Length: 252
Image (cartoon, rainbow, N blue to C red; front, side, top):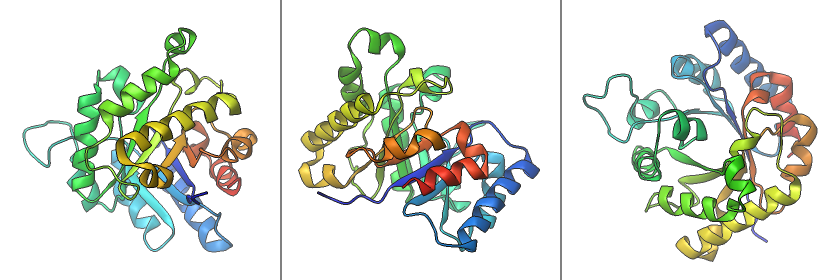
C-alpha cells in the first residue's frame, strides 16, 4: 500500500481580525517549536488580510500557509480578486479552489474551478480542489455520480500528486455538526481514487492525497483519519482554536 503523508489543513474562512489571527498562528508555531511535530503536514488558510503576517510567523517552521481562493488570471482588471502569483509572493504554498461556499455563493462552475486550479499550479502552488454533494443529491442517491462529475470537470489537466490535493466535502456536513459516517466517507474517497486512476493512472492515483472536509473535529478525527483512503482533513470551525486543530493533527 502506498504511504501518503496526511495533510491537516485549516480553512479559517471569513474569520479573524489581526490580533486573533496572529495569536492563532503564533500558538500553532509555538506548538511546532515546543516539541515533536505531529506525523502530518500542517497548513493554515487565513483570510487574505492575514496571509502576510501569518506567513511571517510561519516562516522557518513546519507550518504552511495557503489562500482560500484565487483568480484564474495572473493580473489585470479584476477588482477585488487575488491572483495565485500574489498568493505565492506572500509566501503561500497552497490555494483552495472550488470550495462549496464559492460554488454556492459565487456560482462557480467546474470549468471556473479547473481554471483557478490550473492557474494556481502554474504559479507554483498546490491546488486543493474541492468537490462534494448536497443533501438533496445524497438523498437522491447521486453521491458517487456527483463527485465523479465534479472531479472530471474541476481537475486541472496537469494535475499530479505533487501539485494537487482533492478535498471531499459533503456539503450537508459543513458547519452543520453532521458528519459522514466512516463507511460513507470511505465509500466516496475510494470512488474518487478510482476516478483519479482512470484519469491519471493507478500510480498517480495511489499517491494523490484526498482530504475529508465535513465537520472533522478532535472527537471524530482519529476514526476518519484511520480510513484507508482518507489522507487528512480540510478543517473549518475546529481550525480556529489552537487546541482543537492541534488535537486533530495529533490524531494522525
